[in-house]
Image 1 (cartoon, helix red, strand yellow):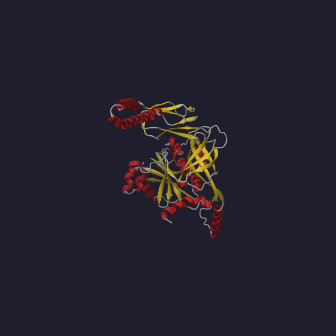
Image 2: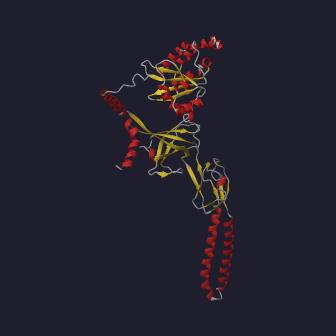
Image 3: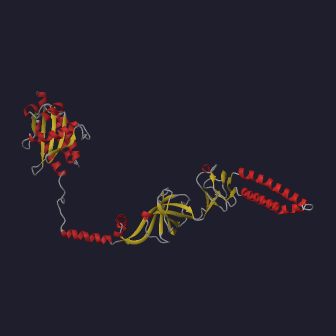
Length: 447
């Protein structure tokens, strides 16, 4: 018994440090964590609970040994119900020792007490300066704390109550209500701000393309046999681009060549018979027309054979996706295969969605922020705009705009993507902020 009465001096010296730690807490949760855990060396409790009073109910702020209590655990559900009963057992503002045998709690409280709590509780009610109870600190212990220790801890309880009250104090202007004059002044300020002139802007996806790009399409119906260039390869005028399969055309040309020879032979024989047989003279016109027909068909197929080799019409860069996507693919006359673009004349191709469209004129400034080089934007001006909006590959209805690229930046490479910022006329701030809501409201209301 004497061993228990003697208090370790080094632990008593820590009381000042505990008060300093409470004063340094910047949030109520930080303070609650200190309250639930820092007194264990002195009290040797089984568990400590910090409960905040919210009217007639209580909120569990902290449970010793747990960083964040599970709100839906059976223990905390029972604890929130029990806290209301426990608060009614406390009389006055001083700490009290509550024993299960002395209190004889109701059945729903007694069952949980037997399962989760020891025989006794040391409860410390914390009150603010106005006398209102802030919360409870409950230590689950097998026996009351030492008598010499209780007066020494009185300063700790007072410090906790002071810090709790300071951290939950309402702000100075929490109860302030604006007067009619304040409302009129705020309305006037908003009206002035709404009339401030700002530049109307819009954002749209953009890509760097060539202004001088020649579309290379299939000259005839057929199947692509070979692609002679790679994507983004530099080509000269007359460079072979791709070749169509010649098997069907070459076979047909050979057959037509034989038919031309047969028609010429029949025409020659009829001409020789016409000297002795007047009846053969009437066949000369028919055989001559037939020979010319076969010769025309043979010439047409021969011309198609010559067009199976597609050459570049100009110098530039071959722009397409992947050669393997085209080899062996049937194509029709006029189907787009690739482009031969001039890299020395880059422009911005901007797809402005209809929902974000603003009034733009030719010459309006444009800034392109490339995805690959976001810190080095490109400047330019609008060159042309489409009259009608069309659906893009992404399924967005948008206007097509072309804008120049000013300067000689090193990032003016064809194919780079980014976001273009388009600058329109100056408008008031109120219109700038309410333009889209007004448009949506008009579309929904129909006026």
